[in-house]
Length: 380
Image 1 (cartoon, one colour):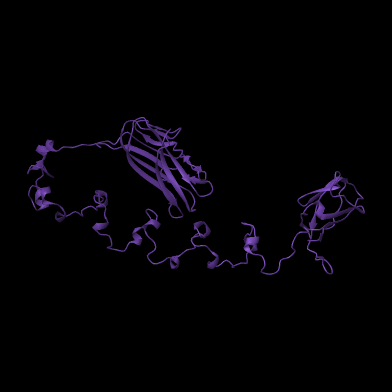
Image 2 (cartoon, rainbow, N blue to C red):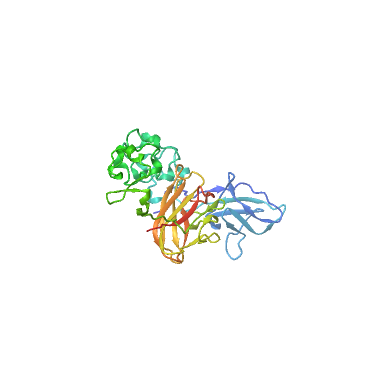
């Protein structure tokens, strides 16, 4: 059915800003109110040059367009005049939609960015559950009022983070000690009394003073009901190991570590190497003899960003590895790992580190922060 009265106008009609001709120039930028505009096509515009409407198409078009640039078929000269450029818009456009008529189905995915949101308009009702991760939270922005009582478990406490100041007095008893973990280094001088020693340590004496009064007495039981004295010291069986071969090497200056790529740590500074088993040129350790070894790895990052990082002891030519994965944050910038394992003679190992900060970060280059050390366990 034909329209009654005037047919509705639904194009986006615009007149471009005046353009000054430059002698010898063919290309010019089209703007409306000093903002670049892009026509739908050459067929959606009317261009007048020196009083003549220009041909937009055919075999010999008078101009072409690329984005917001119009290029005439030949360079213009002083005295030429671009009378006007009239943009018709897309004549199939629907014009300006009525209020509350554009639904989600009409919007292209990933097309709306932050410039279209009203400040403060995104509330909890519009956030998906579990959608706010650590990268969206400002550093040092969450305090104790936001934690649920009892919600901080051991999985959320970094290693070596609880200091003496955080432990109430008289709160640690024997159930919290690892069996055999209290060594002489942690017992103050003069603190072990007679009451803390089994009487079998002596020769039946219940008083340590009386036992020590015998200058020849060694405070050991020989297992046969007698006391071992200096004259019978040959009955003591002793094994002393020197825990070699061994070496220790550190980074010689800071080392930059790229994002999300396993990087060999350049332990170029040998602190010692009893058997010349570590190569400080390619940073690889060759196992000198089959046995059990204790491997210690330590690497410290500069800065205080939050990210995950992993140390790995990698077996050369096979890719087999021992991995130590830890978090790195503004209170825990050092990765540490210790491994006791049997290593075969002539096998070669090196250390890699991988971090996911999103950018390059630096390992601190000194033996107090970044070190690779190994020694063989004697007697096992």
